[in-house]
Each structure stands twice: as structure tokens, then as C-alpha cells.
Amino acid sequence: MRILYTKLIFLCFFFFPLLVHGQVVDNKTYIGTTATTQRLQSYHHPNHSISIGFDILPGSQTTSPRLSAGYALRVTPFTAAIGAAFTYYNDPLSLLPIYIALKYQLIQAHFFPFISVKTGYNFSILTDTKTPVEKHKGGLLFNPAIGVQFTLGKEIALYLTGGYDIDKASFRQKQNDRRTITTEVTYKRFVAGMGLIF
Image (cartoon, rainbow, N blue to C red; front, side, top):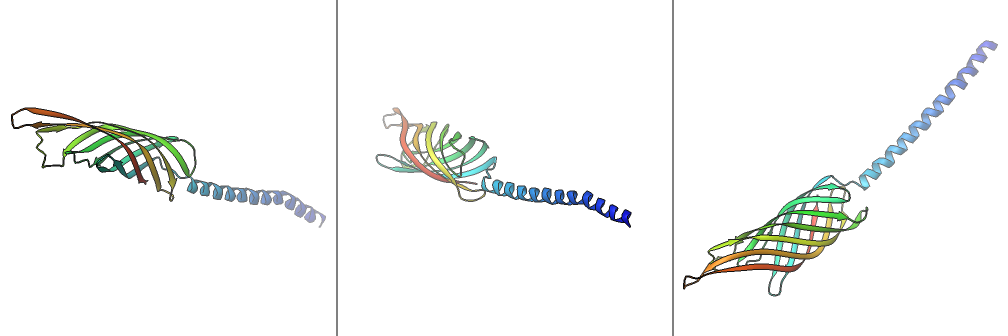
């Protein structure tokens, strides 16, 4: 009988620490997993994204809209992107820029400011068909900007930007006296825009 009691006491001392340890480990694992999952959901930033944007370029006589779309790769705090846009100048040309962009995120947060620069080449499109144009071509695009971005959901964000835009193009016209006149066009305008990132 004494031997039986001794064995029971020994088993209790042997298994009790294991049971307690197992509960503590499971509890820590559960808590750690929950916290990690919540943190990933709160701070989820995909490494690649698609953006669509709308800009306004006010001029002295007209205001030109610009629609854009791009694909970006993100390596915190930098984001590099390629994209295309359409800028409606109708003077007599409109422009179709193909660009690359670089954005630098100033702080790590849901709501953060950033600086960016966009550069590329404008392909020209004759949209004012009433103006007799013999030949036309595009030119440089350069657009530095500052902005803010904030998260709307797990995988969607909204951005607002303001900056300065330079667009170049040229066109050639033939006059009645058979002279040819080449006009170099440089648009220098402030630009304000907004867009969504998916």
C-alpha cells in the first residue's frame, strides 16, 4: 500500500509540471499568434500595387485634366512605378506620357507624407483637328510633387498630391506662302491630384 501511494505521488510530481508547461506554452502561442495576425492586418502593405489617378493642371486660359494608371513595386520606404497617362491640352496637341516614378515615404504610419518625382516622354496626339498641322512630336515630362497617403482598408489607399509639371511638345505648320513654321510648346503648370492604390 505504501508503495502504491509512493507511485501516485511520484506520478503527480512528474506530470503536473508537464501539464502546466503545456498550458502556458499553448496560451503564449495563442496570444502571440493573435497579436501577430492583428498587426499584419493593420499594417498590411503589398509589395506591388496598381494605381489610378486624376490630376488638374490649371493654366492662364484653360485647365487641363490628366488621367493616369501605373504599376508599382514597394521596398520600404521607396516605391518605384511605371505608368501611362493622358493629358488633354487640345492646343492643338494633347499628350500621352509614358513615365517612371519614384516615391519616398517620410514616416511609417497609416497616414504619412511623401515626396515623389515623375519623369518620362510625352507622345503627342492631334486633338484639335481644326488646326492645320503637318507634323507633330512630343517631348519631356518632369513632375516633382509632395503629398499624403492614408489607408482606407486592408489593401486600398487614397493619396493627395500637389506639385509642378513640365510638359514639352512641338508641331509644324505649312503656311499659304509655302513657308513652314515649327512651334515649340512648353507647358509649365502647377498640378493637384488624387488617386487610389490597390
